[in-house]
Amino acid sequence: MRIGNNPNNEQLTGENIAFHRVIIPVYIPSETEYFKDSWQVFEYCLFSLLKTSSTQLKISVVANGCCTEVNEKLFQLQKEGQIDELVIETEGIGKINSVLKAVRTAEERLITITDADVLFDEGWEDAVLEVFKNFPRAGAVCPTPVFRKHFNLTGNIWMRYLFSKKLRFRPVQDPDAMTRFAKSIGWPWLDEKYKDLYATLQLKDGSSAMVGCSHFVATYKREVFEEMPKGNTNFKIRGDSELRYTDLPVLKRGGYRLSTINNYAFHMGNTPEDWMIEKFEALATTEKLNDPPQLPLLNKPIIGGMSCEKVFKFFISFKPIQRRILLMKGLNREQAANFLGTKTASQQP
Image (tube, rainbow, N blue to C red; front, top):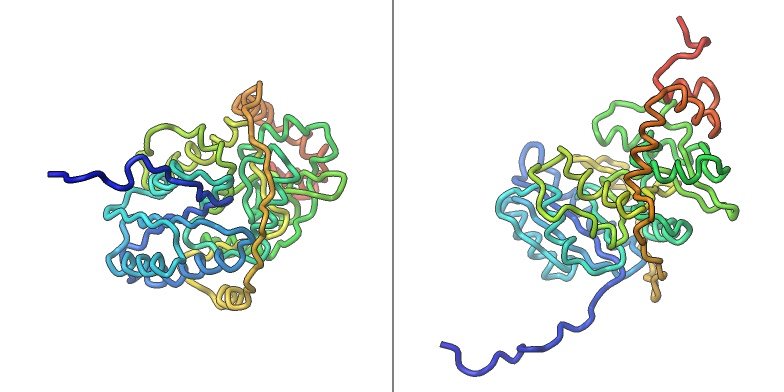
């Protein structure tokens, strides 16, 4: 039986929309074995994010099949105001489905999706904002440049700048950071040939960005997600879920997938190392911006971004054409051979 009227009937929600939301899916089913250090890694992720951001972030955490102890600690963080939105899923629904819980209702201008094992460095958000401001067609920006992403879902960039001096291979600014990234995903080392040059866009004023974007952490313009599939993915992890839900929507919207030239975030994996702890403890609290920048909307292009991708992929499927492009864009013959996985005459046994 209902008596009287609910006082909230017909009240407007009011405007409380921040400029930037960060979504963190968390999967810690236990605090033993593989996951024994995962909570500490997550804390480094969350508190480095809070310390180093330059805007007033809204943070959404989706607990995806976490154990009771972890869920209780997440409740406490929300109670303390460290987390704005907390979603608890008792059964594991996968990374992308966890992200969808928050991204489909997010209204912020920018949305960052990050793994729970990312350590954010000072200046990361400013650097990402600079790329968005300097390149209006940027749809996704990663604060970590990684190796060999130059031809990965970047066909619209290459088709636009193929004959422009703005697009060239240039020296990597922080090769040691690339080595750390490789080690964090289980590689024992990273050959020099993978961290000497990367493809970049550079404007006349010196502003630049790396061509390509990893998705372990990336910031997106909100309108990109209008191009996502309507339903959920069937994969808990990997499969084609990140491709379909975070990568291809950028292209479908006609956006560029770019990264910052310098390294502003580190992939930690499941075990903290001394250098990560030192980096975290040395972080200073960044002063917040009062007025975030106005970023132009990313309107759909007349010629679809996927069409550019397909045409460019067809062209570079022919190694002589790909080799010609690499040489035209600043690689020498030996470097081009390394990129193509072939050997020059000087490399023959």
